[in-house]
Image 1 (spheres, one colour):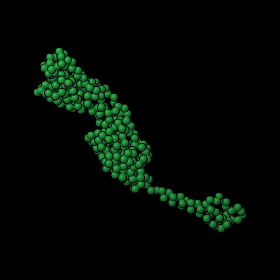
Image 2 (cartoon, helix red, strand yellow; image 1 turned 90 degrees about the horizontal axis):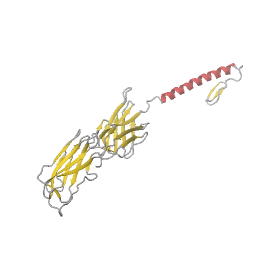
Image 3 (tube, helix red, strand yellow; image 1 turned 120 degrees about the vertical axis):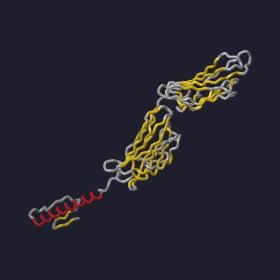
Image 4 (cartoon, one colour; image 1 turned 120 degrees about the horizontal axis):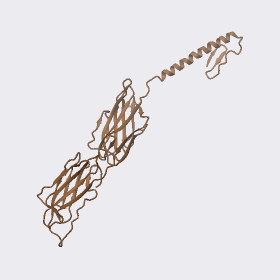
Length: 330
């Protein structure tokens, strides 16, 4: 409450100065009071502005991406998380979790690059969770934000678009995607979500065929077995993990022999063919069928004896027998 001469007002009361114009002294006193009150109000406004003139909390953002963004099944993409800090002080205790889509897994080797100094709490090959804690985001300089990043190799074999999301304003946990950090002890978050998409192409399945020569043959004679594995994809190589051909009962590999493998197509690699004498199988380990190429496996076999005067031996490539890193089924 302010009081001067015959004029009494509170801040909440409308000002009605000197209802009696003939009273000059009251009018002057009231005018002085109004001037004083206006000055007092101005001082209050200035004080309030000073109270809130401290630096605002950082604007921090997080983005992520896959490079390349489109892969063939089983290929590797680099998953990169980038964090920016507009504050003039570093952000501490930064934590990020990304629960990747189920079809996307961390590759081996992981190939980690970590410029934020995170503690990698979880990022095991074959899993789909990246959980990072105790990171530091550098301070910005002038108009340039401070930045750092975390990068890791991932892979996927399921065709389609797989979308990874880091939500806004979410505290990360072992199984909860999110990002947070501290500026001078105060929690800060990304205010907009970040999305990244990994696209996996659809490829054609490999095929296999077999042939015996001569056929028909005489029991006890040497027969040449030829197995042809075909990759019908013009734009993708087919890395082989293992392929085993189990011979029909009564047929064995002749040893010592000279089993051979020859692959074709862009990017081919001849694997190792095992055909042990006396055994009932032929195995290819490793190797790559090139683009639109083949791998031809050769070994000598024989049938020591038959029941009756003739006997048929059927040998087929079983479903799924052509093991490969792309998850394709023969």
